[in-house]
Length: 482
Image (cartoon, one colour):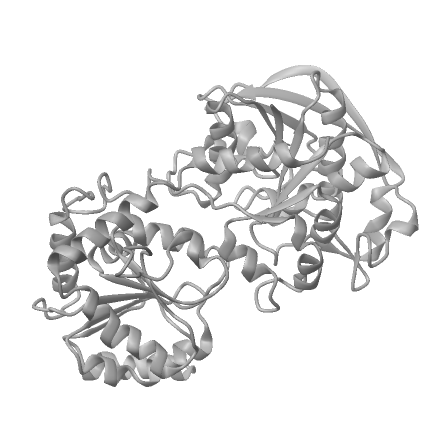
């Protein structure tokens, strides 16, 4: 299969930073390539890429000319290959792409002319490639007009739009619609218009052959008012073509067997390093080490369900009366009742409660390795990666039941030995505290069963690879009419 991947920010392709969150731009096409598919990646030639010594960009001699409102813009097409042999096509147009901020390149600073031009260039490149691509894979809003241009030009391409963050939509004033060179019949609620503005993402949601988000958890979340960025109704109307495909776990960064930030590494066959990490974590935070009960971890930097957070904070004394250790990373706005309650708990129970407002990366890794359970109370976007990281480190999730949870973890069922976490089904204090104060400690009562459960969780997380992600994408591509 020939796949053309369109992404507005290709700087991760030249980054040596293994923790670059945008690495999916590189990992997915590389996984396609390793599976034997013919893959090309296309994007604007950003200043950081042009200055990079990691790539040798050569001129193809190809020029693409497209209308942009009342003007006609001619762009040079460059070609390069990454160290892994991945083919890249780069659009060179200094006046448009050369001025994008190097500190936050790509979509973060794309204006309407740059994004419209990028979408049009992707379409024109697809037309010129021989053999033609079977699939156009679009990453986020800057290329999201391409499926609409395919339709208006009656081009036989299937397109898949991946949505990382629905709040990043590419919303611009009505005056920018003229840049599309389309009739005003397209500026309507069933087209590119959204509340009187031109909206790239909405256009892509409607026009693309299929839509992908980062897992079934996110698929459910995006269709709610809390997480849909205002486009939840559009996503619900198009739920039939909305698919959840989890990203592969980046084991360069999150792998307890090789983690350079851990003093003692571990793997499923030998969990001694996890116990060592637990003791080191408790000692470093000044918590009592002789805990027979669980060590809970709550990352406040992640979006949380506010009512649940208030329930937890408001009744923390009840939980801390038992033999537990509780660690929070990050902070909350000082005026929130939960922030005040956590501050009070840390003062009243210094041997059992630690509040770390500004953790460094080393402590984040140690906390994940040393904790027994991770509280994931948000059910929010990007939850899948948080679940997988915890499972990879043998730290079991505690979460409220929501759509897609079974795919990643599921509720532990002792009778059948299935599930890798603890799930509560009501947003009530009783349900939350029954899970924390009774079900979690009960799991740890049998050392043999507890070790077996954590081993299975770590092995389960290891199944979420980029090869699996690519295979699920290809399976989706094969189901699309072309």
